[in-house]
Length: 626
Image (cartoon, rainbow, N blue to C red; front, side, top):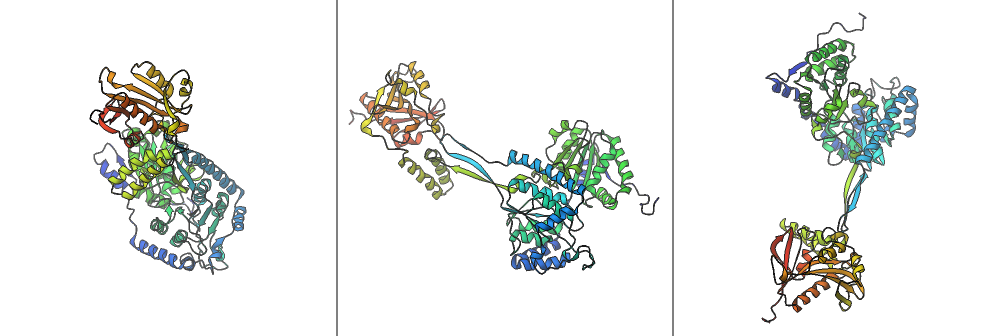
């Protein structure tokens, strides 16, 4: 055994659970428990830092950077990196590193471009009354991304945060990354006066299209991004991982700015049917356990012998891992190997956990994927290791943790966009929507809301699309061979489609009804509409002393000029001439029907509904009584 190798190590005391055991639920509850309560001391310090930066701006940021990072600077300008600095970092990394960064960035960008097309576009449409409704999608103006710095090199976090923002169309991406001075500092320190910069992180910023980079970190950097200083511009949203101070600061500035999420410890859950080499699964469990002692790694499998094999591989592989102490603490503190009755049961248990990373390490992963409802990312098949998703597969590695995958999603293009509703109401639409809005507003006791809707109703009625019809030139004639073609050419207005039948159907119906009359509405010699009347006195089932308005159609190009009102006046006069006691009609039971129009003419609802249509009647005075 070499001098630097670890000595014999005890087996990892991983929690073992079996869903068939009576005590499974209690053990599973203990496994899932994790307190996300913030440390009161941290919260108090963060609150003080945020308030100080908000009050003193750059001076406070410089002071905290010197205190916590050991980095002295006379002004914030000294803490901002230039494009030349980023280019130099790109040149400083090895060709292999540059290729890896560029390949990963290309895949991440390609995935998020597809995401943009799928969920990042607006839409609009016009409804029946001509109103335009839609959704406008616009990118945020400026976002800030937080990247851990110093010896903690996370270039992948730069790519995963900056690229979707760039794809979304964000105009300015501001990155903050601490560059703490290690040791005593001074000329002998490798980082020099500028602290310990990581070339991979800065090269990733250059490749990802970051606009500005400030070498600041901690709660003071979050405060600078949220509130803005004389040098650091205020952003609209802050994303990216950080320590407890950063998480607390993000939580506190939420509302002033948007944030991506408050991330908890890393998690992986593996569903295994026993067909993947146990060594692979053991290493996948390590891949999250090595993050920190609070990370959680869980294996679910219906194959007891396979679970035992994974335990043996964990014990065999752990001594060779550089971060073995952290891995052991994580596995023994929050890890578990769980034997289930079936793969289906394993899927259901996984849904209860809602893990950050979920590997379906099975021969037929697509068989089980439909059963999985809650997970940040789902890796299908034995070859899909979680680590590929962390770096270069393409989907984002910023994922919901601590069970929040039940209601949250991975970071994506949509996180760097906002949506605005589009509402353009036509004059006809105001008449459709106004009564509905007014009725509801009066019900809520909001009279101004109701009146605002009603005023536009009146405006719509007083503002015809063209010159009003001249009663002197208006006439009604039977449909005959001289005007039939013109009647057939009439068009139903867009807002009335579904309420009024087209003329060809109307004429076909009246042709088989001897009690019906088809009439053309004319302005001079021009056919502008059509009217169908029905003699209710001759009805076989329910005779009534009514002249019934079977259908009224005004051409779409002649709307809101008064032809409908003139036609109904003619009908009333005709009913009087023929000795009817009333004029009747009915309309489809819909809010956008013409009931309001007929009420203005004196018609009233009878309370009857026949074949889905509400009946209305206008009682005529008895001539003899007069």
